[in-house]
Length: 144
Figure 1 (cartoon, rainbow, N blue to C red):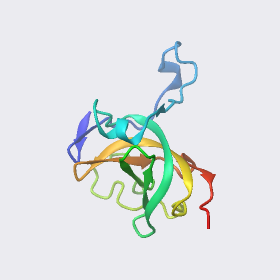
Figure 2: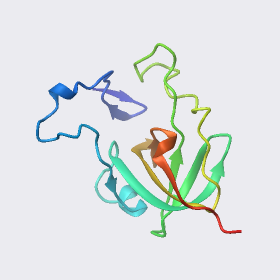
Figure 3: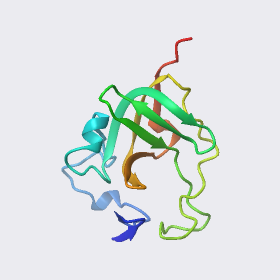
């Protein structure tokens, strides 16, 4: 355990499926479906794998980020997957997570999506950190 940007972090380079509980035959974690309001209020959700959904707003091509509005009154910021620096396995390295994945393309403004990712903090605000481009699933194209 360590702290990265005021957030607790587990530094692990691998998970050994042979060491996981036999009560969990599927080693892949499943996200908890939550509203944006549930993610940002109440119990601390930082570090949780969650899935939410809604209309895409405020797409920023340069920062590769966008917000999702699920109608709960909270617009959740979603940030593109970050690349780890070549040869580094330690997120305390200065370059860790600085560059956005160049293959990531944010969804179109006003489209409907589901998003899955890890809840994190950025400048004191909750954000959803996407793990891969596959964490964004298009449900409906924007209507003209």
